[in-house]
Length: 76
Image 1 (cartoon, rainbow, N blue to C red):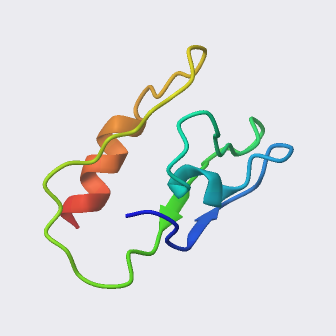
Image 2: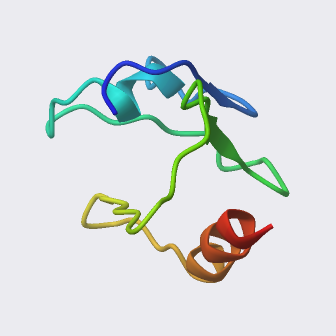
């Protein structure tokens, strides 16, 4: 699902939300560290049966409880 509309609560520098779906593994999107409840979203434009979601993070990234949040959001 490349180049779908994306949104995030804030932007850290030039790491805009759309970089997450540009298909290039060397770009990244990032919210600011000061956001208490950071979020990122993609509009797929239609209803889909989602069988798998893959989140790539940098070496220093810590997803912590976000994995659970991602799965919960898909189920709702």
